[in-house]
Image (tube, rainbow, N blue to C red; front, side, top):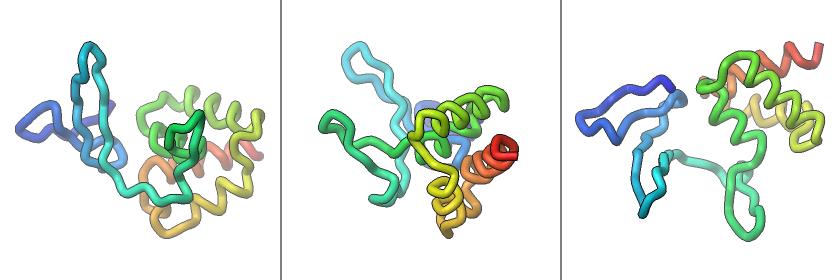
Length: 114
């Protein structure tokens, strides 16, 4: 993972520029990302609020190897977790136009849909 370290190495900016922190709760290590996530990128699974499949792919895109991101995106499309139309619509919105992960997802999506 590409990180920009702050004085406390448990707090850094992730690949998309979101403030991120490593925390430990009991015996579990967690990485918490602080980001402005609009309601359209939130869904509920088993009673827990989580990011949508598309937003999750966008958020992890820069931390994946190129082939891995292609496989993840192809799998999400195959399983109909996202559709090409839904992806293009979200990727074209103002908050995603300059987001590094969204730009990479757009490139990979273009390649997959050729």
